[in-house]
Image 1 (tube, rainbow, N blue to C red):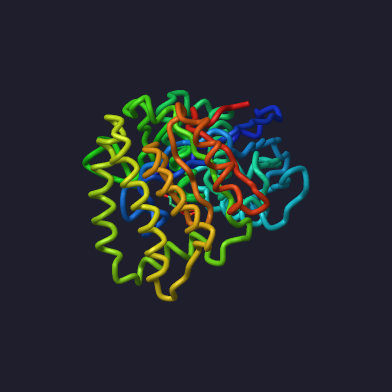
Image 2 (cartoon, rainbow, N blue to C red; image 1 turned 90 degrees about the vertical axis):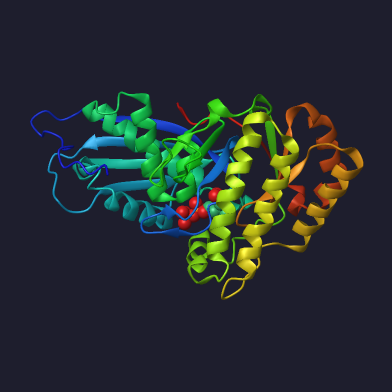
Length: 362
Ligand code: DP6
């Protein structure tokens, strides 16, 4: 879609060395992307809230290579200030795959310095923030060198497209407040190739939502998201699941527009349980939920029944619980977490987050 062999630098007029830095957040899916086909295409539309505190900062430094050869991309890679071979290898493979889109990458000496705002071991997925930050750096680099992405909507679309190729869910992190990824008649302009903004349509109450992430386990997951998606191909419930996701998507969209918290909460919790049920009935079956995950879920349901407060949970592909609630009850909910939930968290660790305005260039 974005292949462009003309994006090559003229060696008789080389660019000055420079650097670009983006801070990009994670996002939490309300309708889950689980199952894909082709090159990172989703089987159903998904929608997420963009977070604020869980983010990745990425600096991309570039310098024209005098003797540009056609070989490999010249990359140095630092994670939290230290060279990281594993991340470098992964990033290099990703950049190589992007050469038809950004052919100028092999004419530059590149250095990437990156780091997360949360501890690497916290069990918080960093692929959405990391891949979106990198995609934004690459699009800003293209624009700095060629002036080709001046229109903000074009820029965001390309950044979302590139982020998607790195990690599906990352394409939704480009936009403020909320984003939709996956073609659906419910959202004009929606696409399987990139996410589109949904912030303008979101009811005010959701722009002031919190997501406190209760870290049940910091261990690396036994089954990666990539492998989990692949297992959907043989899952006997897959087609029913994709149909259900579409139905829930349409109902949730209305609740997000109107501020209907009860409908929002019901669908979001059902999505979390469905995601993990799909893992449990994959072949081979696996479980990412931990006993403490279930204890927290029961406590949240009890708390809602006794207090009537609109506090809901969701899960991503891991044991940690995302607690979603409107900002006006923050004091009550924080007291509840402290008194009743913290004991289920590993080392009492909670990553406090909230709905945010999306990535920023820094
Ligand atoms: C459960 O985006 O991490 O968080 O495309 O293989 O990188 P890849 O998968 P990834 O999957 C995220 C799955 C999820 C749901 C969601 O974010 O929609």
